[in-house]
Length: 97
Image (cartoon, rainbow, N blue to C red; front, side):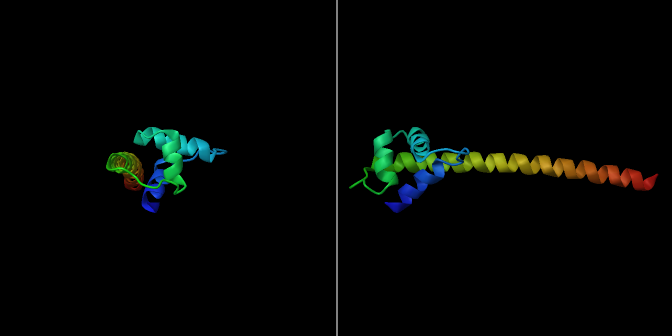
């Protein structure tokens, strides 16, 4: 069950500055389709049992979040590569003058 609590914590990230745990639990609950209090119980390890639908909702939300983060990271890397290529191209042109 701790793995599900950790999954909810990962889903709640990033935390804006000054954010409270209540807001983080709310974000995780919205992403997983759980109620706030159900997410609260899982977050703190108070849930006695977790049904398959809840487990699946958390897993699907986590997969979706990780894919989204990977797409953002790939986009950022492509931008960095393009900037470096432009910088190298300018440096090469300047050295030929």
